[in-house]
Structures are given as structure tokens and as C-alpha cells.
Amino acid sequence: LEEALRQSQKMEALGQLTGGVAHDFNNLLTAALANLHLLARHLPAEGQRFLGGVRTALERAEKLTRQLLSFSRQDAVNLTVIDLGDSLRGMGDLLERSIRADVALEWDIAPVPMAVAVDPVQLEMAVLNLVLNARDAMPGGGLIRIAAGPIGAAPLGAAMGPEPRTARIEVSDTGAGMPADVMARAFDPFFTTKGVGKGTGLGLSMVYGFARQSGGSATIDSRPGEGTRVRIDLPLSDVQPAEPVLVPQAPATDLR
Ligand code: ADP
Image (cartoon, rainbow, N blue to C red; front, side):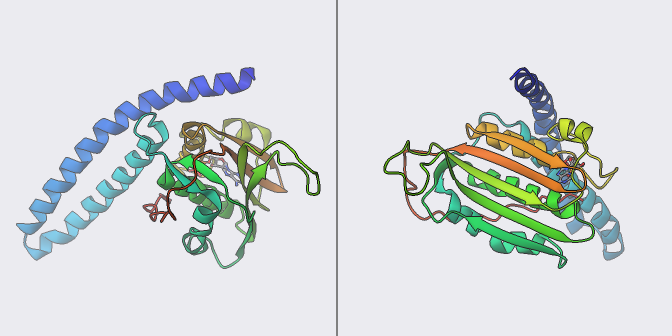
């Protein structure tokens, strides 16, 4: 418990700091890109290719600040009641496109209603980040399993039991796993072992932020040489999804 408290205090402080910086940066970048766009229209063709490089760099910076904002955002979340199973199934194509041919995706989504109040875009980004991490942890190929279901339900066959209050998402892989010191810091923003220019260290902190914003929690279980499992527990909502929810495609978040 003490560890969880320490972690959430650290995340809060870092969130406030990065949120402030990211917000200002985002405004500056938006202005820079808008001016670049204008400049491009007044420049002869031979100047255009230099602008291309500038634009690419600015766009990458914009993506990064957007990720930072989504990690640190505590207020402006757009909570919508959705069905978790439907949303995850709706991500099938996006996730298949994000992995390599030597990586297999296995699905195990409980065929029951699971209403959760989340920001649907954040949910998609969180699951995508977990799948990208799993892929990166399996350079020689392997298996990614995406599971979701209610937990705390009465065992099958029991006459009556407490209603499940929690839905659990699990993304597991058969990859490299994490040594204890990496696991201890994996949720920290900017912590990465992937090297400069490859990892941002924001994927798991975004996952952590998403879980907290949704009133849930995120945990990691990992064994070096065996694999990793990340769990997101979300409170089930009493409110039912208003209508079938179309989950918008998340912006490309793989900054590597
Ligand atoms: P990034 O992916 O940019 O490095 P993350 O916050 O997503 O940032 O992850 C932080 C670190 O946690 C990674 O650099 C990696 O060392 C470790 N990690 C995350 N997911 C996994 C995984 N599925 N298997 C092994 N290590 C992982």
C-alpha cells in the first residue's frame, strides 16, 4: 500500500510538471506548423524539401506532446459508457496491423456485457501501447494474448453470488520479460530501456494514467525470459452503453 501511495504521489507530481510543459509546447508547435504551412505556399519547389524535414520533426514533437498531455491530463477526460468487449473487438484490425508476421495475436474476450465508463480514445491508446510493448519484447516472434472479462463473479454453477464489480483487461506476451529493477520503474514517465530515439518511456505511464482516470488500476507481472502480463482493472458501470459505440481510430502513437 505504501508503495502504491508513493507511486501515485510521484505520478501526480510528474503529471503536473509534464502537463504544464506539454500544454505550452503544444501551443507553440501548433503555431509553428501553421506558419510552416503558410511558408510552404510561398516557397519555390526547390525549397519545399527542406520544409519537409522541418515538418516531420515538428509533427513528431507534436505527437510526443500529445502523449504527454494524455498521460498528465487529470480533468479533460471524456468519460463515455462503452461495452469493453465490443471496444476491444473493434480494435482487431488496428492491432493486427501493429504487429509483425512472426507475432500471433490471441483473443479471449468474455462473451458477456461489460459496461465501463472510460475515455474510448484513451482505452484504445492504452491497449495499443501494451501490444506495441509486447511486440517489442519479442524480437524473435511469439504470442500476444488479449483477454478481458469480469472478475469476482460467482463460480459457474453456483446458485447465487455477488455481482462482479470489476472488468479486467490483460495483455500478456511470451517475450523477454523484465528484471525486477525495470519492473519497478516501468510505469514511470520517460523510463525506457529502448534507447534514445526508440522509446519515449511514455507508453506504460499513459496506461497507468488511463487506469487511474477511469477509477481503476494497472499492474505488471513479469518474469525475465518468460514474459510479461499487464492488467488493467476497471470498475463496471451500472449505466449501460447508450448505443453501440464506434471507437474512433487512435492517432498513430508509435513514436519509435
Ligand atoms: P517505451 O516503450 O517507450 O520504452 P514504456 O513506458 O511503454 O516506454 O515502457 C517502459 C519500459 O518497460 C520499456 O522500455 C521496457 O524496458 C519495459 N517494458 C514495457 N513493456 C514490456 C514488455 N511487454 N515486456 C518487457 N519489457 C517491457
